[in-house]
Length: 240
Image 1: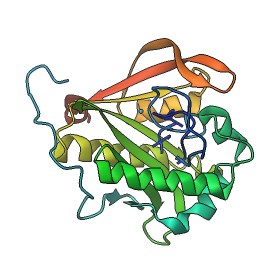
Image 2: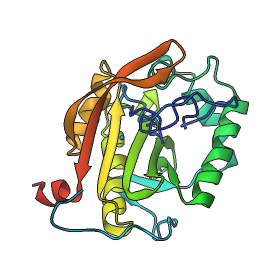
Image 3: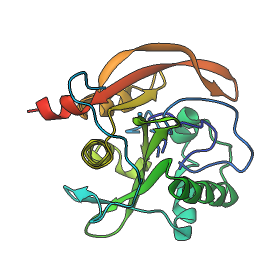
């Protein structure tokens, strides 16, 4: 998973990130990692071309989707499966969620999702199967305050669907939307140093590993390092 932009208000954007997040009811400690990209089990500026920042962070129409998955907006009915998913030890470990994770935590998170869309600062999506509507995970895009051309991604997927490429697909769908429709210039995501699975998701999606951010992430047990990844529109344009 990618790490949460607000570490203790996730799962859902995560993904930490994703991130893509279900959030805890209590006010979270400060932190800057990219949502939740539940970094681990699956589960984050072009020099020549200047992109105008988006004026409106609107709901994609048509919905983002492809290769068997579709992204939709979360709703109150998602509280139950988010609660179940976020009691997975792997998600709790990398995102720093309260244990146990309760339905009240999930509903608090969903309220934050609504505020993010309303304020046009965060776009959180449920990743679900295109054919059966099965909820698979969450992905989030977080626009940086004061610089909407800079954004972060977070994501996580349920334990039952890891290893199927779901997180990579979701990250690519949101990345293309951010670059092509919103005018985002640079995407970032961070993961825990030992979250190898989430790092592989970032690499498969074309992100570049930039280095280690020391003491970046606030956790219940203290601050820890994070690995920073980035993606530019030109990276996707050059992809085979």
